[in-house]
Image (tube, rainbow, N blue to C red; front, side, top):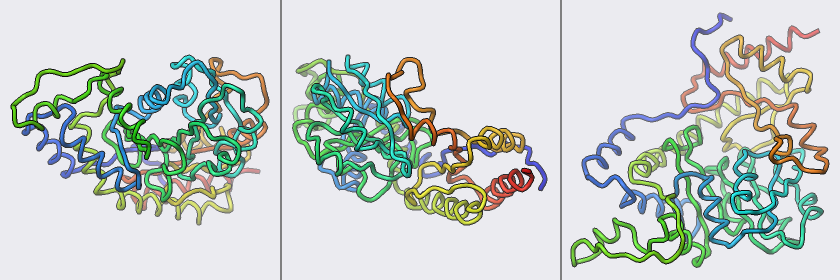
Amino acid sequence: MKIRKNVLTLNRPLGGDEELEALKEVIDSGWWGIGPKVEELETKFAEMIGSKYAVAVTSNTAGQDLVLKAADVKNCDVINPTISFVTTAVVPLWNDCTSNIVDVQKRTLNIDPDDVKKSLKRNTKAIIAVNMAGIPADIDDIRNFYDDIIIEDCALSLYVPGAGLKGDLAVWSFQAVKTISCGDGGMITTNNKELYKKLRLLRNFGIDRTTYDRASKSNQGYLWDFEVKTIGYKAYMNDIQAAICLAQLKKLNKYLEIRRNIQKRYNSELNNFVEVPKWSENVQWYSVRVQKEHRNKLISHLASKNIHTAVHWKPLHLHPIFKQDRNYPVADLEWLKLISLPCHPQMTDSDIDYVIYWIKNYFNNQG
């Protein structure tokens, strides 16, 4: 097969006329800050997930930080899995907590309840459970022995039925290459009314009413006065981001159908060459496992054919800032086998064929 000239990217967002029209509407309205589009997105997102409340924020990371602050999780121990993006380990440090990093389950690479149980401390006040590649973490098992705050990190599980409903709160991502995107942004969902009220204050400097509330929800004109009720932060989503997200939300089923087709093709045609994942059909990104001696060679081989790949992720405990004095028998072995392959809604059938061909080419020429 002829080598393509342009790079086949690992991930890539897809937008169109709908997003442009949504942006035009916001620009023409003159309301670019937090306003009616943010409220609409929060309402529709909560309904879709099956949660009572939703709070739109600037990112998943900002959302996790606000959750710890709203739940008064500080100067304590926070447990999180080693197979994760750095968010889950660094956010506890921002709140003067210990980032207690535990091992993962072999099949799902989700947080291991058994290791959580062994790692609990007297001052453990929160657990961050990441839903890897769409499979919800085993929060039910953790609940058998732990009843404090559980944050469900759903950055990679939109939309997976049941995701976001097991923890006390869930945090979602609309970062540039997530299932739906607005460049960056996030959402917190919860059924806890008190935490919801705190989160709305915390994301907006602690101010009790947004500018939009004071400008549009009174028959007395613009209400310039407001009160700061707590120390807060600038972490609110704006209507420009929300408008893009609302347009993307309408395309969610279409995007998932494309991703499922990619996954189905990979599973079917690569099964004899790599270990295909037993992961959710609603996959955010697609990783396979190979023998560790092949991992880096295969990455280089595909790169030479202009195919981008990645590793999700280098275990957190291997970063110097998060180093732990303990063993990670599952993560230390399994991450060396991982390769994430291109999987995004801009991929065509010929793109999928191209990836499959060059992976088969690599293994057929071994030995």
